Length: 120
Image (cartoon, rainbow, N blue to C red; front, side, top):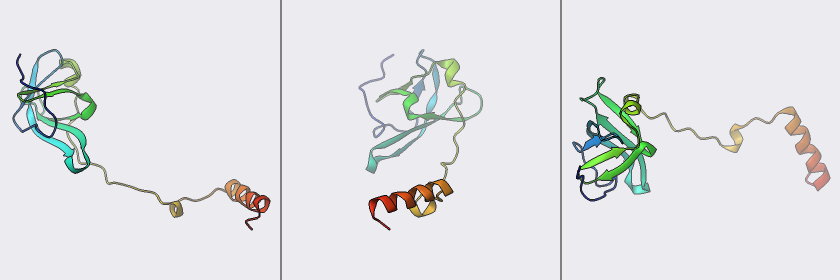
C-alpha cells in the first residue's frame, strides 16, 4: 500500500483514508483536532462508515503514521472498533493559590514555621 511521503497533522486534509495497523481501511479523516499556533496535535475524528456508529475520535498517541495519502493508526482492527465517539472538550479549569483551603494542620505548621523563621 503506497501512502506517499510522510506528512504531519498540519498537512492532513478531510477525506484522507485511515487504516488500522493491520492494514484494514477504517474510514476517512473527518477533521483534525489541533492548535497549530501552539504546535499541539490532539488527534483526529474519522468517519467510520465502514464500521458501525459513525464518527470516532482517535487520540494523538493512537495515530501511528501520517502520510500524504493515508493515516495508519497504532491500533489493529479489533482495537479500533472500540474507539470512542467524539465529544466536546471539557471546560478548562485552573486553580489559583487563593482558591485552596489550608487544613488545620497546615495552618499550625505554617505558624510554627513563621515563629521559627522570624516571619511573624
